[in-house]
Length: 140
Length: 181
Image (cartoon, rainbow over all chains, first blue to last red; front, top):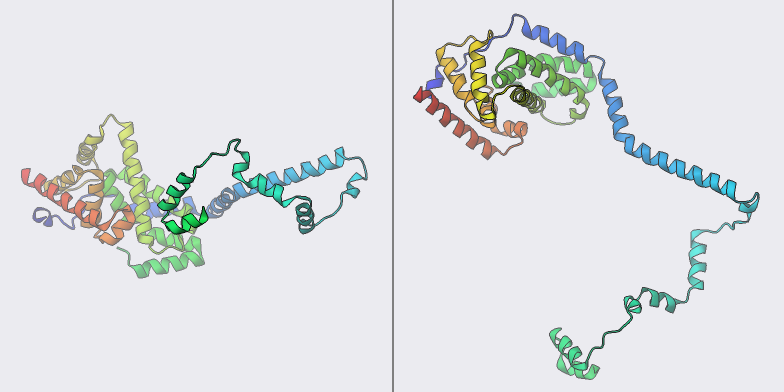
């Protein structure tokens, strides 16, 4: 940058007289006393989604409560037994046959046709899985 | 250029009394930021608008900033964004094409009341204005503001390597422009 070295440090731009004093005053008076409003607004904007969720939940609870009060005959709610979650799950599991539960959760239970697999296919598969041939014969 | 110690004191004051602290930030940085903006937007009226917007934005976000480290790079980043916003607005509002914005600004220099450069200074400014926008910012920050590449990478969110390469290209282009004049 040899050519520019001689003009370095010289600022060719000018500003009106007392510009910086004036602009500083303008900026300070434009911003003074506005920070709290800005931050209050910022806090509300940040909390708005949570407030919306809280309000929705409150409305749902209120509606459910009102529905129970309106649609159940007077005094009937008193007969709803009070039961803890542990008591409920224990009594529920006692009523269910464990085999039925296994059937329901077994994915093959839902398939109408069980695929037929030949002995040779099983042997091929087990060999692919590196199972010892003697072990395979023992199993089959 | 403000020192890190000066910045630390300003941040301490902002924590204690945000109004008093901000007043001192404005007094410390207004001229530095003005000249940075002015070299980018060229016209005094535009620089004045961009400077005020810079401080208004800084004020709006000052509470969010107070736990961060460098006030200096934070303010330069806001000022650079304000300048680019203003230049883009100028591009939209005039029939000037994106490539010709440098020539448009160069013409603005010649007609400006607030430009008092001699022939050599005008030539240098014209050479700088021929650079692509990003290279122009890098060149100005390095050459006039003496900003380190480390700080510049925080302002422009670009790697130091890319900034060094950008500055090198800018210098070559300016030298070629001046030699060809």
